[in-house]
Length: 159
Image: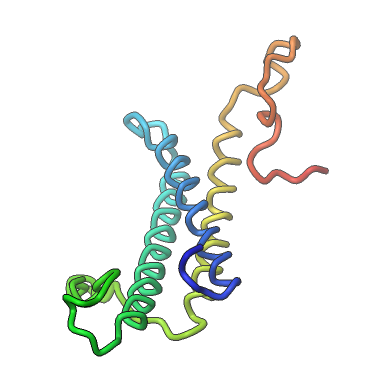
C-alpha cells in the first residue's frame, strides 16, 4: 500500500501475497508426513506450485529492487540517505545461475498475473485431488456432521 505502484500492479502484488500464503498452507498440508501415499501426479503439481511461487518471489524482488534504485538515485551520500539501500543487496548468485532477470516497465504486472493464474489453477487442482481421496458422501453419517464446504472442493463450480 505504501509503495506507489499503479493500481493494476498493486492488485497483482496483493494477490501474489495471498496466493503464496494459500500455496504454502496447501503444500504444508499435503507434504506433512512421509508422503508415501502421495501420488506422482500430486507430487508433480506440488513441484509446479512451488516453482510458480518461487517465480513470483523473483518478480517481486526485481520490482522492489527497481523501485528502491529509482527512489535512491539521488546525489546525496549514503550516510545522508534514508530508507533502503539496494546497492547493499548482492544478487550475483541469482544472476550467475540465470535465475534473476531485470524486467522492464509493465512486465512485472504481466508476469505476476500469469504466475498468479497458474498458482490459482494448481491450488484448485490440488484441492480437488485431495477431496477425491476423502470418504464418499454416501458412506458418511446422515446426521449432517460435515463442516461447511466439504461437499465441494476449492473453486468447484456450483452447477
